[in-house]
Image 1 (cartoon, rainbow, N blue to C red):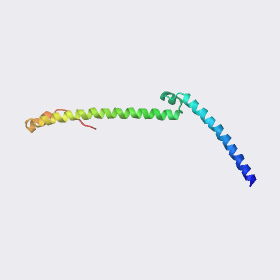
Image 2 (cartoon, rainbow, N blue to C red):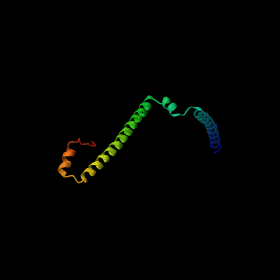
Image 3 (tube, rainbow, N blue to C red):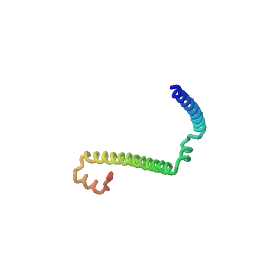
Image 4 (cartoon, helix red, strand yellow):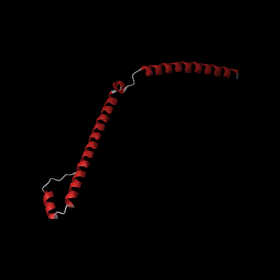
Length: 112
């Protein structure tokens, strides 16, 4: 019984010294991390080449998607103006034949 108690005390003291030294190591590592530069450019430059290539690919896709979205906004605005012009011409009182001849000469706009 006494022998198990001695083993327990020895193990507890070993764990206490190990945790104290590991706590000091963690503290020193966290201080070195806090002192290092954590800006986006520094993090990018420190990253692995695979991570860099993924980040650049995501940036390129983001720019591409924004370009498509802005283009669609302009396209919808242009189409809405064309529909408003057509509606005004349709309800203007012209005959359908005259309206057809006037509009068939113009090129059509498609959204595709």
